[in-house]
Image 1 (cartoon, rainbow, N blue to C red):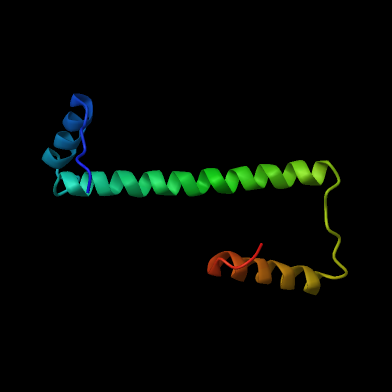
Image 2 (cartoon, rainbow, N blue to C red):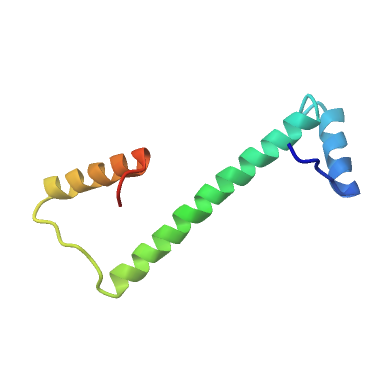
Length: 88
């Protein structure tokens, strides 16, 4: 694990959070911070994909489905692929 250097402001924030009882120790503050960063990154990626989808739709790059059942089946297939990391 690399050594981490924090600014005085970051150290002060961590100390305040621990002193206030919000977190049990500095590791817990850093862990929560990384969890939040990870969550924000997932949201950023999802938003980027949403914007791309809107742009595609506005440009006429859409797929028409024969029925609602075919559409739902395709959504389920893509969801499984994303969860398992297989295909696109």
